Image: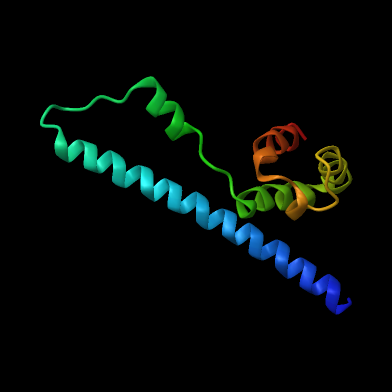
Length: 111
């Protein structure tokens, strides 16, 4: 493997790590904001539908998606997984847009 392709792989992984860190920081920020609101309010708080939907909408990470794909690949669905990746415009998982992780997982779970 050439130095350029190694560097490209490392850059992709660094981007993925950055996206993961952004997701974590957003989650922590939401926790601190909600904790701050709870401290300011003396009344018991109730969870609204919007808050429960946000809690359910977990941000998927590359590592989580990779684990599911690896499991399916070991089960013999490697060719189908590659076809799904190509359908999402990528030759490998790290090239898939993180906003497409959920849709990709839904397709893979059917296998």
